[in-house]
Length: 310
Image (tube, rainbow, N blue to C red; front, side, top):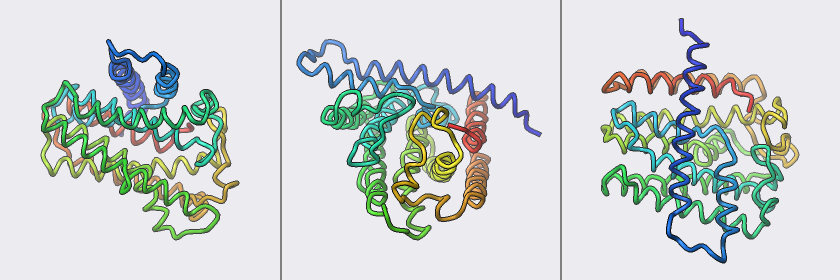
């Protein structure tokens, strides 16, 4: 039997350590020394406001830990920071009045409430573009790996990834869609970037094509389970815990796993996807003891995400 308390403590420490390392790397990327930013300091402030607003840093965590599974150490650090900058840009845009129109994010005023709508749009644009520059110029990997990482990020963020999924979401407001379309929407909107995060770690470590594909499949399943849990928390959670407005999906007549499947079936589906993702981890063959530890951390994350309350 697994030691749940030990897993929880292992994960808590790992999340904290990885978040600190990623935030330090984000600062290196954002605060480029020697650059004269006079005249647009407020834009940089808006970018940093959302980038350092907290959060679980799940995507960079997966990027770093998959790299360690295959003996890459911290070589994925710039990729991890890049994927978090990209994720942050999507949150800024998601909160805008033309999108989900949310005044709160991570317990603070949304970017457009703090800096104005126009600057928030530019802050999201700036972070999204900066993420590709960060991946393409990582000092920890060679040019070939950087090119692969940048292309992977672009593919999973763009029209056939996160952006395409967001458009399905907008198109679906006010009308019921099939469960298969809901799954497609979140495979693109949420799971694509989580899957990419796992693959970025593999790229940095020089993992095999087979291992990289397995990591991506793991990420897709975990990403869908993550989204289902979000839908459940929108019904069962509290605004204090979540740090954002709840019940908005129902009020906007949005399709969710809960609205299409019911609460209990949604919970069962999240459990099924999590179990499948964990099963995929068993196929991974870490190259060292540090890799085994990383693998255990990833499994602990899966179990945590299934029961999280924020």
